Amino acid sequence: MPQTDAPRTEAAPHARSGRWGGLRSSAASKVRLRWWTEVPLIILVYAVYTAGRLLARGDTSGAVDHGLEILRVEKVLHLNAEHPLNRLFTREAWLGIPADFWYASLHYVVTPAILIWLFRSRAVRYRAARTWLMTSTLIGLIGFTLLPTCPPRLLAPEHGFVDTMAQYSGYGWWGAEASAPRGMGGMTNQYAAMPSLHVGWALWCGVMLWRHGRTPAAKVAAVVYPLFTTIVVMGTANHYFLDAVAGVAVMGTGLLLTPFVMRAADRLRTLLQLRAPWVRGASRGEGSAVVSAGCQTSTGERIPRQRESRTGPGVEPGASPTDTGDSAATAAR
Image (cartoon, rainbow, N blue to C red; front, side):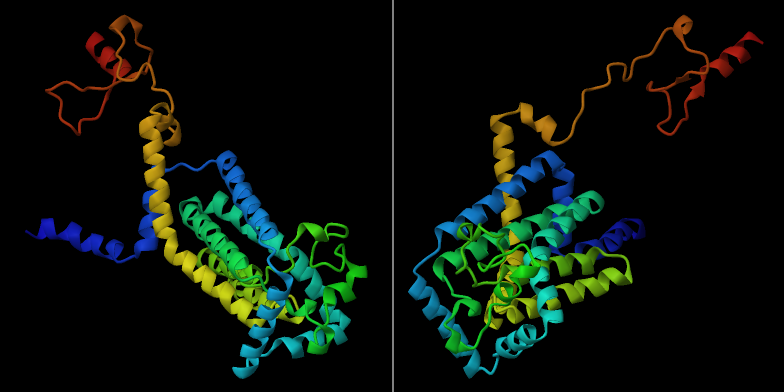
């Protein structure tokens, strides 16, 4: 019949909307996110990421060999854009100094800001976006562990690179050791160059701004931010071009793995709820039941203008409630 086919036809566009959108809606209906659970989770993942970088320092000579091998591959493929950019940033302070500030700060400011923005105004999409970012970050940590790489700025001077952050360190808070504040260089792993998560996180920010930003400025920022970040990491001699390519590849892999990670997290949450039933109501955001729900007062106890719900078997499902005050006045007449 035509009536039975109509709902199926209307549902078809939703079925074709993609797996990502389906995961967002289903996850949002099952899980109610709270900031006091999200903040510790993000801090935990970042702490694991930072600790992993420190523990995976690797062999310095091996890291230098990896860096030189990447440089040789780029020269063979004619992809060596680091040298001209680094010479430009070294020669022109009006470019090099802002680039150093860009590298040292925006990585740690823009990404959390977009996470907060998504949580507050795009909560339906937040969980998938956060899972994508965290999964990719942990994949990048595996890359740092398996392939410690010396960045261009730490190669011997004969390779033609200048550490612009060391050159312009008098203008910022950083010292000669990467973007760490002065005196804290020992707390960073300077050989965690492959992949470039500066580029990877910037790409994530760009995708979020492009998909969910509603203004032309957001669309422009979605393109400019990851593009300029890629230029900055090469011009400041912190990464090779192939590091940036690897950062994009890591984010792509994280995006593909995100649905599986979310399903695994849902299964784990269900298992925990089965073992701890009192958690079930809290995880769904259920409050206490209303004690007076469905109760009726006697005629003498009715509040003036109180509406009486008719739920008896003789009442039609669509019948509207009657105003008790009006009916009593009619009966009196």
